[in-house]
Image (tube, rainbow, N blue to C red; front, side):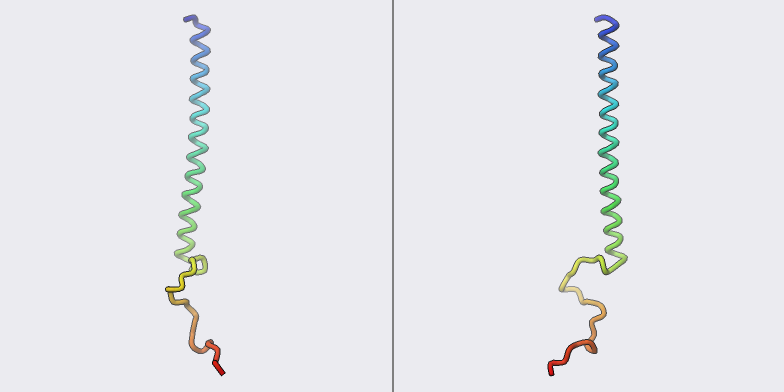
Amino acid sequence: MSRREDNTSGKLEEFRMMIAAILISILSGFGAGYAMRAWRSRRRRVRHPLYQPYDPAMPQPGVSLARARRAF
């Protein structure tokens, strides 16, 4: 094996490692962003009842008998 062939394979390996590092950093960035968005959404649902999903089994706040319509 000559020095030229050895140098070319070294550069190719260096290029592959650089591409792998870039792809891993991009994927980890997307994963961290998704996790942060899910965490904020969960926190928002807990703090603000407006963002909670509708559940008919749960009593609705603000419903009183004074606002009920009369039958006649």
